[in-house]
Amino acid sequence: MASIDKRADGRYRARWREYPGGPQKTRQFDRKGDADRFLDAVRGDLAHGMYIDPAGGRTLFRDYAEQWRVGQVHRRSTATQCETYLRVHAYPILGRRPLGAVRRSEIQAWVKSLSERLAPGSVEVAYRWVATIFKSAVGDRLIAASPCVRIALPKKLDTEVIPLSVNDVSALADAVPLRYRALIVFAAGMGMRQGECFGLTVERVDFLRKHVRVDRQLIGAKAGVPEFGPPKSKAGFRTVPMPEVVSSVLAEHLARHGPGPAGLVFTNTHSNPLTRSLGGEMWHRAAPKASIPEWATFHDLRHFYASLLIAKGCSVKAVQKRLGHQSAMETLDTYGHLWPDSDDETRDAVDLVLVQLSATGWIDLCARSASAPVASPHA
Image 1: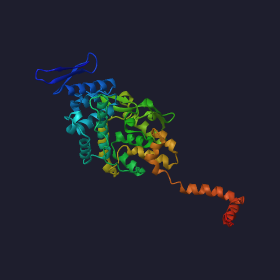
Image 2 (image 1 turned 135 degrees about the vertical axis):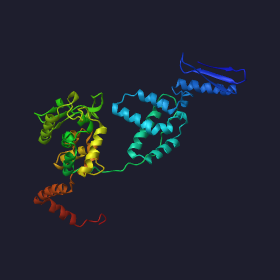
Image 3 (image 1 turned 90 degrees about the vertical axis):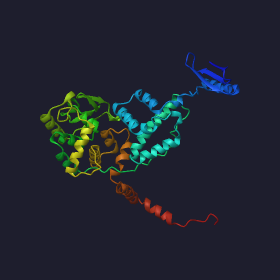
Image 4 (image 1 turned 180 degrees about the vertical axis):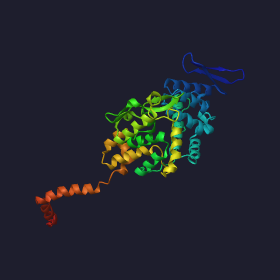
């Protein structure tokens, strides 16, 4: 699989194949000893599964990234995010760079330039996609190591969720067009994600038992035909109780507008599936009229729902289940500050027990023992 021959110009050509029948690789040397040492290293790397194709590092980042991207099994929303972040943020700087030529310092400089115009979370998403692609290139043995190591990312600000008030939600429902009023009430009263609300169909609503089954979300539409995908996670599959107010508003909405394609409950003015861009436009037009905070988005209706459950004394586990969180820790990390402080409850619980002990004389005995003089061990 490997050999050396002397060329007419006096140089030595090393030839080898990565596997039997594979394409022949060549490299030229001025001295035969250098060619021998090179082929010895190639044979060792091939034997140990550590061989790196010298030509692999010359592959352009964009060419490899596109090859990698189209081969991934991603949900549609994830695939769209990946394509957008690479095209907008990575390719303009890294796209025409050979994989093997990109250095760690270049990645750090790229991250810094992104942080000057993007939020920390967006910078991290862009970096994670690039790091994943370089890691894949290492796995494909195109490069020996990834430049995405010890990269300092901008720190995210630890911001606490500030729930909208009842007046905010009420004003928002009044500010949106009549067709979307039920959508606002439903999202605030059920705590479902935007895609889950947009993908709600009539057969998922049980008006008799007053609950909604969540087992999919709207991920897009083609020619007016909705495309559904699974919820965000396994925990997203759930059944959410439907309050009477929400049930009444939903029934009135369906009586007025009727279901859309595939039984969609919420549609646009042309009875087509809703899109995130349309939802954002509707929100931004209504928000100033309702005088709600500028930072608020559709997702804040979900936070509003969670705050109501917490205010009414629901447990962490109950809130986790209703929201479809994967763990109680996720719920606590997001909403822990909304639960009432337990200091007073702790004091009352301890006082109750100690009062009972005091009645038995046990505390008085402990007090007398603590005040008694301690004998010296040398006495």
